[in-house]
Length: 164
Image (cartoon, rainbow, N blue to C red; front, side, top):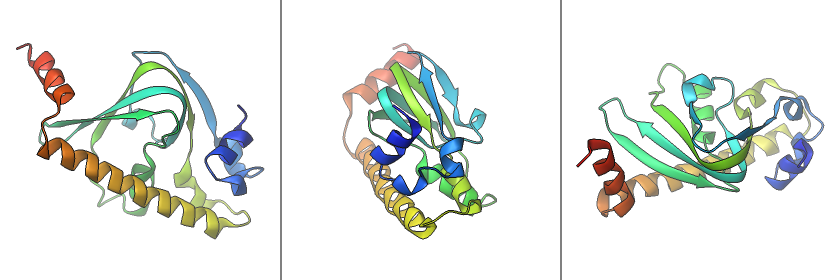
């Protein structure tokens, strides 16, 4: 799959042929690979072409939340936009990406769009806001459901970590 095909697939045809397309990176990740977001300072948003990736979010209080992402998901969009918009106010969580099965991802440096000049820029930024809001509500619902309902997988992981 080419970069242009990927941008078209995720609905950002306006970015084909721009400097943004040149910054997109396709990467293969092996099962078991672990990548912390802080190591990916330039690329925090990505699109999953193949595979499954789990995010483990470590809160400052020592808590952990798990969220799995699958083919077609675009994790990290809110992080990229938030850190650009208010870097001093943004409360950074450590997020570990663990590859659950061999995967192919595409790094999307959306945080750099503000500095680029291209046609239909406002349309692209509007799409990003909409996708970001939808993802924000998905994340909120996911975390809310984790606290309200018992989740078998959540407890199994907890017990495995504590070796009970």
